Amino acid sequence: MDANEILKRYRLLNESFKKVLIYRCGIDTGFFTEYTRMIDAMLYCLEHKIQFRLYSDFANFGYSRKGGWTDYFLPFCQEVHETFHRKYNIYRLPSWKTILSEMVKDKNVGLLAWKLKSYVKYLMGDVCALWMYKCRVLLTRNIRLCHNPGHKYSIPELGINGDYLQAFKILYKMTWRLNDEAKDKCAALCADMALYGEYIGCQVRGGDKVTETSLISPNLYVDAIRKHEKAKDVYVLTDDYRLFCRLQQAAPEICWHTLCTPLENGYVNSNFTQTREEEKKNQMWRFLASIEILLRSSLFIGSITTGPSLFLLKVLFPTNAFPIDCPLENFRNIALLHLKKRVKISQTYLSSKN
Image (cartoon, rainbow, N blue to C red; front, side, top):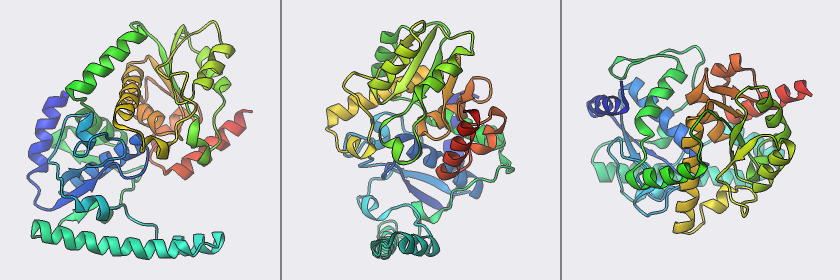
């Protein structure tokens, strides 16, 4: 099925469910973490026969007040705009046990106050939703998103009959539809790269990723790229132009391409969310254009620890994907794990290669 047919069937199926979830997208993490959580919530709703509705006003990746998702993409479901969602529709909190153990470990009493304050927000969210919709609806924190590696998804209306990756690819195909403005901007940026034949793609991350895991050396990407015959042209998604220069110096025989500008010295999500409208638009268009280029690559090399790479590896797996920090044959199960576990696997795997 093509994307339009999947979308048509999804809307019919989704709107047939009586119970409703209003999911908030774009709270406080990077774009692809937000995107993946949204896809996971959609899958949860399909399995449990819950109608999925989206709230993305004031999304951290959006640039307009009422835009959010539709700043860059076409709508795929009913969207809501009631303002109480911005303050009270929040993610599920860690358990009391986790909070208390972290509080003792870090000697941070503020964690307890933070959780109590968040519970008040939970209550207010329920009250506001009941008042607004005159019936109980589920909010973002009411669903628990986790995947069992052995679980099989069966949603015949959408052609889903397999594991998580098969389901993810179908929902990606339906939701990843750029709006006219974003499509035109991305097409122009892609044309500037003049990548018309076969090429390899990779992501080399800098910036605030270092707060979550050790950054992977550009030399490891060069070594991986050189093992493949189609290494004449390589497109690089990076947030730090200095890393791009290191790739050029390490392998001058390769023709390197990027939309990263010399002014970029590492992406920090908290800084990005505070940028002005025009600057944020331009950054997101270059980012989305890079993803479009990488989706068409003959081979993508990326890390299981970064959002864009994990997304691309999931979509391109198994034929056009090469995770640099885990065995390809294990990726299907590793892709389901939380970031902390993926970081540990990445570090162990890379250490074993040294």
